[in-house]
Length: 368
Image 1 (spheres, rainbow, N blue to C red):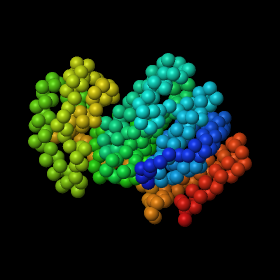
Image 2: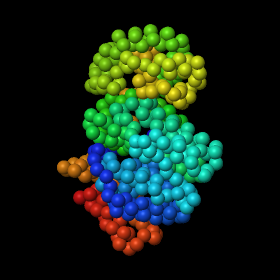
Image 3: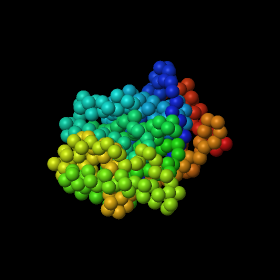
Image 4: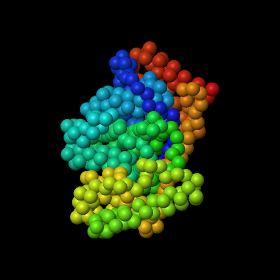
């Protein structure tokens, strides 16, 4: 992973008023247009894939730094304001049903068929990875993809933890993804580092992924016996985690008692050659992938990385959780970049001054 971090993203209710959304779309359109003209379309995707820049961009457009809604509203503004025909870029997907309709939205666009097929595969794989391969307790409820007509792409997804009421955002940059199942993210932003995560995207979990593929290619009857055996060993795994790491295995990571055996039989007949092919089989969700991973470690001793992939933290304080970043250099770069781009935008003077005031306010929050 190239960059990760945490930011305070509490789940806020309510909707953006239409007048603010119109302003955000107008400003987003102008900023992206200048970026494409001066830096190229790929650089826009790279910036969207940087959690620091994305957070600063949302503030410039007019949204609260610390709200989970920044993700959904910023991507919504981009979806409505940038177009393939005028920018050479498009955004599809969004929150809830909009995210589910991403493949349908891609197929409606006037781009080459082979590019459509590639983007649909990217969309489905990235969603599967952040929902099932990385099991951190956050369920994906927002999924959006930004791309060019040539097939360059980036992903922004967000998950929700129903217990803590906080969100976590996942960034991907296509040109940096060498494997969908191993260290694929360009950044992850959330509120806190979780104590125990089933991180099958880690390079340390490579052996567990390989063993999972081997297991699914075995007769399903053997898998039934191994799951029953593993259920008896679950207590051993929990004790090992508590003794060695002072951690407790969360309920959402326990050995599942219900498995989609129809999907398992389907996978057995397909006999996937690798983990990426395995997770694309319809019906193999988080529970089945977790069962395979736990059998891999409990029965065969394969290593699993239980660490949260969040590596750095935006420390925060105060009633509203106003944050300041560990990497001031990275945030300075984002602010200065946005300031220079704003200078070149064609929005009216009042709107531009408001954006500059928001940037100045962001700096004051970062450096009180």
